[in-house]
Image (cartoon, rainbow, N blue to C red):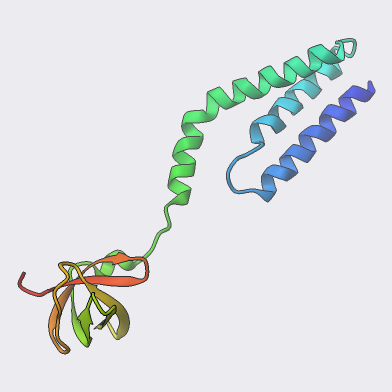
Length: 148
């Protein structure tokens, strides 16, 4: 077997290992391009090296074009972190420390958990007031007085 077959096969394996070390589908197309080039070079060992490199580039580009739409959907889905925070939205909470956005103070208790809190409309909300948990901003609960 021609030594170029082993070089292309080694490149395919190395690129595949590189892909396994990342989470963003960086080199899978190059790995498949190198593998396809390996097959062609094994069948036709007299292909000059510049043509082999061109085949590798073309195969890799074709794989990228053919799988781009699927990969974009996959990456968009995989970057969304599933959380249970949505379960708290629009739930009632009790203010356990006066909420004052200007002084950066405030906390609420919901389902037995205490969250640092800020008022959605910048109003001061006194301790023991009933509020609605509207959203999360960083690690702070954004709340509004219940009934607003």
